[in-house]
Length: 382
Image (cartoon, rainbow, N blue to C red; front, top):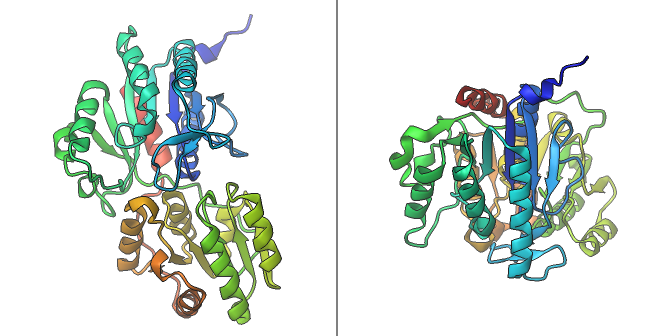
């Protein structure tokens, strides 16, 4: 007779909702993979546009009906066809989420971003938290949070976040190195929940394998939903400086097909244009320069690779997170910065020439093993 050992493994119910890019999904998937490797049984609940390769093997995946950001400023949500979602759609998603929760009967619930972000899906997360509180024994609840938050202008938002944390959350996992960024710098009321905050280190991928193919300059646009101008400007810069060598332009899976086709027609000789590269981290390790936005996961890959970088932080809709990260890396002499307002072919060409003339950035001892540390922290909660 065989023994079902899976029933003795601690169960984690991990919710992540990406609305525009794929950064939230990628970071959560890295943490979930570390949990699986540490012996947890993981149910991953996603609700954004499907992305090949995510959330990854070894876990149970529940895909809720897709929602996306209504626009680049995250004002409202829409379904996969771009239609505003109605109450019936929300009710269906909420019931699917609650059914998955009860079927899993988890020991730990991990909610990515909320209540510090993702207010657009509070219609289903507040019922989930109520279901958690009604369960006996009650699962532990943690929020999974990046190190630099979007600064909020609306009065009362931070107070509401603190109240939800105090009412429902056992830990606030901040996926950062406090020597680089501390949560109170972008969330002023952090002191009120200091007893629940734990830093995990940055959630970077493991050191990559040596590249099977090399390019001198790697240009990447994250998920691609808002990266068209970056890729188009890089095409023009590549035409202006052919002596810079070979280029790989990675548009991201969410770039509209018409934009991808137009860019492919414009790409000069020596430029490879692709939507996605599974070996992105390896390509960075073999490159002279990375040109990208300043999203959390891309920056982690850059830090792991130790390559030169030019950052063009995303600022649409009043976003503040990427500019803060980019300027800190610039102050550490790890990256140079080109703002979206300055984004022209002439300016990018000058910045690329300048970056290539500099030595590789100095090693900086940031903790990049946040996924493994997060697994250890959750195990200690059991």
